[in-house]
Image 1 (cartoon, rainbow, N blue to C red):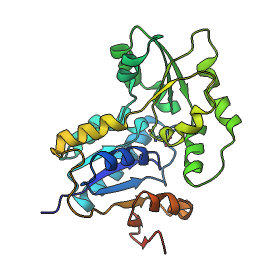
Image 2 (image 1 turned 30 degrees about the vertical axis):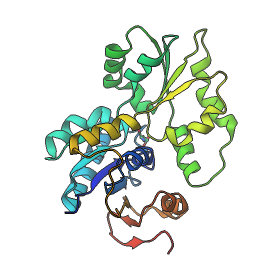
Image 3 (image 1 turned 135 degrees about the horizontal axis):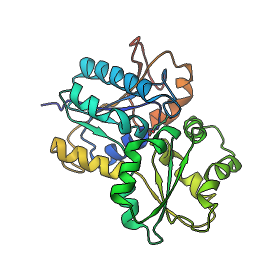
Length: 273
Ligand code: DGL
């Protein structure tokens, strides 16, 4: 019997960092990825706008595709919309939130950096996480929308100026205590982790939520790591009429998406077409 697909949702291409981890660990699952490109970016948006867009997109996805589970692969949305999404949908909803707990477990200097969107660093939810899991750590929060845009450009094959990255991470290293762990609290940021690593002034451990999310999905759906039977199909959806999707085709093809379709118009184009 064919498994139902799972849905992975983000404001843009950031959730692809979660998709990659899920695919690596759970290759038997078929994925419907949705980028809310019409609503992108979420980072500077009001909390109400983020909640409305997230719920609207998730409802359409669930009604259209009857997935077995949905991942909100966006910290900016999960930290505010998760309870409402769980109330509204009758399937398990997994949220991606900043990995403060593992960072606290691995920081020897008791100093952690949190790199996320301006929305996520200011959220009450994030303060709670820090209070609960890293109460004895200094946590330096840096919110950047620019890094979100740079990650989008990187995936489209554009060259990123290392000086732009240096400026973004600079506030993490301004004080006397430098972090030894940096939480990538936005799903876009693991896409540029190697570039970030090449500009940090001291070695750091980068921590994201991908692995934990794959584990959570495996346990909720009771599927096993690396258990793979037969071919699976993955579909990439975007909202609005995002012309820039063509520049993403090489990356999407490399990530094994067999269909790339506009959610609103449901007109499909293929990576090779
Ligand atoms: N990828 C999203 C996150 O994890 C945010 C990007 C945006 O600002 O839209 O927070």
